[in-house]
Length: 182
Image 1: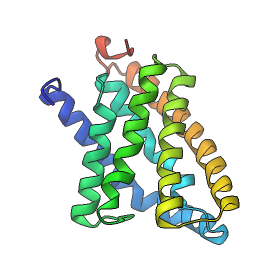
Image 2: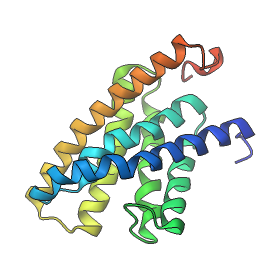
Image 3: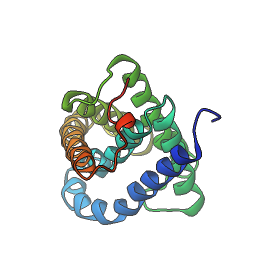
């Protein structure tokens, strides 16, 4: 925690709050489609929600930022009973995708579209499989469908992340030293 500046922590908190704020807007629309086939709604909406975690990792540009983002969201969801709460398991289901994203960030560096998609896909698959296995206890076929849905959604989330970063650079919101992951 001592490696994070107050600016970093505020950025992580704000992106975390945005991710939680849009969840009740996106998920009901997604659940109309996914509930009919008994696939976790998060597998389809997760890419759009994980993009905020990816933005936190890329903009803060410090190891642990995605994990901190996930822990903050998990604690908030659990303590306030937000949409999609799974009790204490929420801490795990929100933090583990951040931990996986951190592991992927150790292997794949940069800010290319491929990198952002890889971050988002891996985080989304992690969250989807946690819910599919431990909460919904889906049969194998539905887990495979949920996994493919998570991959497609994660790729869309990575693409949206790239679009947001390009717009932030155009209006010069991202400081020059934060534009690339070293």
